[in-house]
Length: 351
Ligand code: F1P
Image 1 (cartoon, rainbow, N blue to C red):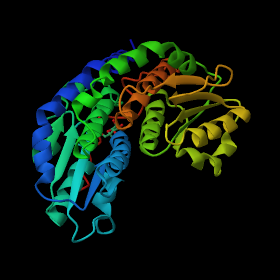
Image 2: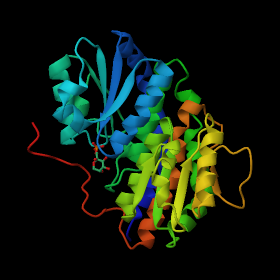
Image 3: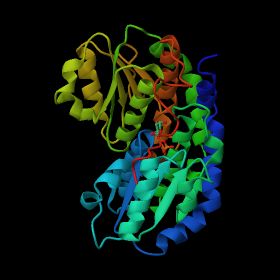
Image 4: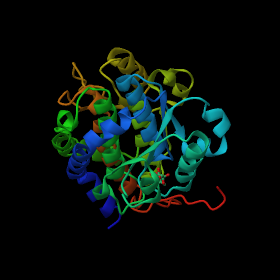
């Protein structure tokens, strides 16, 4: 049946997140000594598509927790514009994020980075025997997170669990035990909000989808946007939350679903943007922690405060993955095999 793999892969995330925690536990001490071997001036996170969006989360999380400059770039930017991306006389760590470990842009970006800087590469992925993982100076692979489906779900979220742990641990904020509740929380979210995800996904009156998120949640908003595109061929966009007022909100109509990934830190400002769009006719789904009830104007998903803030970005994804899955099925798509897409983009003209 269409989407069987995708559905099972989404539902298997609690177990796979547990594997990610275990892989981190096994490598934490050696990661710390790798990190402390030489002081870094900055960290660059890179990937393609979903894994570029994961890089956005990683860079912001790393900078806020470890307190050194960190930025995210699509791998193609490093390949095509190394002079404007890589600065001389800087000790830089490159973190490559890649489910397959074979995406040409990411492989070539790592090679160019090494050739130009001589600095190390840390690789996060789901294939420990892959080219990127084997060439890395330090690798963290969650092999059990591999998917049959093209669109990333459990691979993305388990790599994000890993990236959260890298940032939290190297920043001295905690370790795998600090996030030990993540698998159980994921299971609860999938069970508690499965019906809400299905109702919104199957609502064919909704035709425009805007995912709003800021800080570490912007990258998660981008990934949720891409899931809806890849799986259901729906028009969707992602914005930094307050940016939406600066033009894009002109697109809000009665067929619009606003999906607000609401942080604790900027709750009032972000909630206000979403309410303003609801006043302009949009339906609303908000994910976060809500000190008030919105039974009349918004569907809400409680992310909870059971794990530290730095471990929460990944919790915003499971319900949104399910919504994309249900919309794909309602649209007659097969999310296991999205239109035009392959699991890995391999290019033979990029050297
Ligand atoms: C990167 C990627 C995905 C995208 C699609 C094609 O793969 O671009 O982000 O969603 O699945 O491949 P990888 O480098 O993470 O294996």
